[in-house]
Image 1: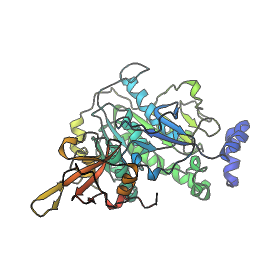
Image 2: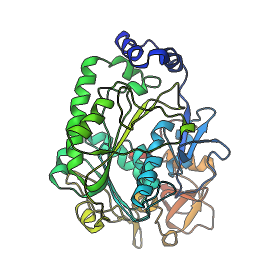
Image 3: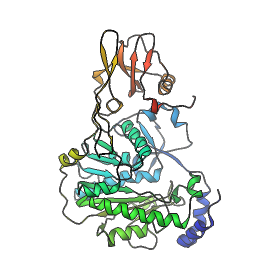
Image 4: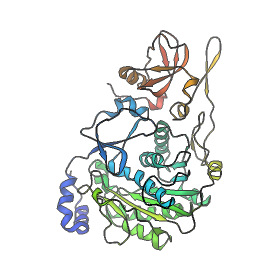
Amino acid sequence: MELPSGFIEMMRRLLGDDADAFFLAMEKAPVVSVRLNGRKPSDAFDGCRAVKWCRQGRYLESRPIFTLDPLLHAGAYYVQDASSMIHYETVKRILASLAGNGEGDGNDIPLSVLDLCAAPGGKTTAMIDALPDGSRIVANEYVGKRAAILKENLTKWGYPYASVTNRDSSWFAANGDRFDIVAVDAPCSGEGMMRKDLDAVAQWSPQLIAQCATLQREILGNAVKALKPGGFLIYSTCTFNTEENERNAEFIRDELGLIPFDLDFPKEWGIPGGIGTSLPVYRFMPHKTEGEGLFLAVFHKPGEFEPSNLSRTVAAFPTVKRRETAVSKKGGRKERGVKPIAGKKETQDIPEMEEILSVAFDRSRYPLAELTKEQAVAYLRRESVVLSADVPKGIAIVTYKGLPLGPVKNIGTRANNLYPKAWRILIQP
C-alpha cells in the first residue's frame, strides 16, 4: 500500500518521533474482531481473546468466511473493528455518571438515544448493548441504501425498542431536544481505514479533509439542538487529522457551548489522548491500540438532567415491535401486518423478520425446526430444506443452535423457503 505523500507529511508533523512506529503499523494486516450479542447467547468464538474496552468483544486469530456462518445471520455477533467497540464502554461510563458514581453499570433508568449517522449499525448495536433494557434508540442514516443495510443489521440484532430513520440531521434539530444521548459518528475522510480500504487511500486530499470538517460542524450543530439539557454528545470519526478531530472538539466546546466530559479510561488500555489540545479526547492509533484509527470525544450539555419522557420519543419514533418495520422518510416507521399466504383450506400468516429475530419473540406462537449448519446455509441461500418428520405442516420458524433464522412453509416433503430475497447469501459453501 502506497500512502499519499501529503498524508505522510501530515502524520510525521503530527506524530513526531512516533511517526516511524505508526507507519510500520500501517503496513501490517488489520486485526479481526467481533462483538457478541449479550441478548442472544451462543457458543460463538468461545475461548477467543477479549477486547479490553468491551466485555463482549473478541479478537480472532484469522478471518473466517463470516457470510457462511448462520450465527452471524441470526444476530449472535457483529463483525466490528475493535476500536469502534469503545462506544459500549463510553455509554457505560455516561450511565455511571448519571448514577452519581464513576464505576460499574451505573444508571438503570431507560434513556432515549439518537445515533445520527448510524449505518451500517456497529456503533448503534454497541450502544444498545450498554443501555438499560427499555431504552429507546433512533438510528438515522441519510443515504437511503445505507439505511436499508442499517435496518437489516438492527433487525438481526433483535433489540425490540429501536427505530430506523432516513433523514437529514436538520430534521432532528427542528423537532426539538428529545434525546438523552446523541451520537455523531461523522462522515469523514476515512484515514483510519486506510489499512483495510484502498478507496480511503485513493480519495485522500487536503480538500476532502476541509469538506468533511465543514459537514461535520453542520451535523454537530443540529445534533446539539436534538440533545436535552443535561444530556451527552458522543462525537467520533475514523480519521487521524486534527481538523476533523481536535479542532471540531474545540468547536463543540467554544461555539456550541458544551462541556467536555472526561471518560477517564484506564491507563493500561493504552489509549492515547489528543494532539495539540488540552481537551479530554481519545485517539485509537494502530501502533498503540489493537484496531483501526478512531477519534472519540464526549460532551455534556449544560442543564440539569431529568429522566426521559420516553412517551415523547415513542410518539415521534415508534419502536420496532413485532409486525412492524422501521425505515421511514417521516422519522417513524411504516406499519405492516403479518403477510398472508394462501393455502388450500385456509389462509396462514407469515410473521415479519422483525418479529422472528427480536429477542422478545414469542417462540410458542409457531413450531420451531432446528437445522444443521449445512441446512442453515442452504436456507440462507434461499433453497428449500427438508425438516424432521415431527414438524407440523404450515408456517414454522427454523433455528440454528437455538437462535431463529426465519420462516418456512412446511409442506411435508420439503419446506418452502420464505427468507427475504434481499438478504439471501450468494457465495457457495
